[in-house]
Image 1: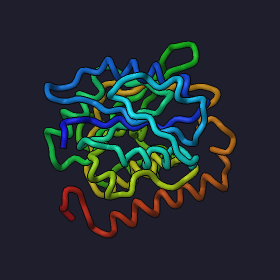
Image 2 (image 1 turned 90 degrees about the vertical axis):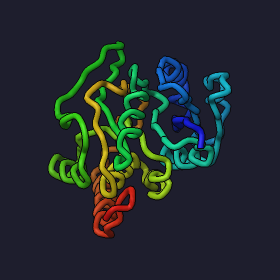
Image 3 (image 1 turned 135 degrees about the horizontal axis):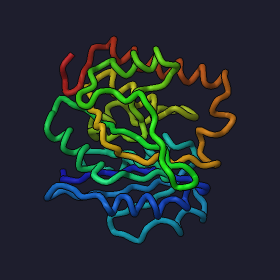
Image 4 (image 1 turned 90 degrees about the horizontal axis):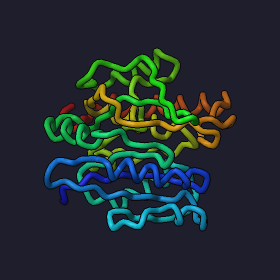
Length: 252
């Protein structure tokens, strides 16, 4: 398999205008010698509004499909994933300098790690950034630690799922993202941590855009009934995986 890191981005019409900034942040990444990236942009639906923002670059693949939410779009994009690692980059976010190189360094150095995450800064509408407390210690995150923290802190994980870099085989083994209307990335994070150790880098790896159109800012996202159901199935999946005793890379 090529020494390639796959960038997976789900996009819909309202967020398409941010793709050029995401692309700029990707082009500014410096990879180790012999490594390259392949950006898979999957539209959640079929419109004429996204393609004009897709960069004209042979390293970029753009596809469309039936609308089903960002988790479905990302999972569909995996059909073209041709490298050992998959990095998530939402259409409205930006990678920080050095993010990909740090992810690769962690995962290449330790075969027992299934995934890597990093510190996040909110990117505010005025262009300023803001951090928040609660990051874990730098280094290894042991199996089960994310679920324990998430459960004890109002369903808030100590690492951000939008920064995930995952081994492709492990991501496929878990079925990609959860089939949920939201929190599908949190569900993936908890599932990954149920079966494998992870890594946290204290350097900023992502600028997480705050804007009026983002899905997490909509009323439906905080509907109490739906949220309770989402959190319930996310937790149940993670606990079921842990109880089965299977672990990556094969240790129980």
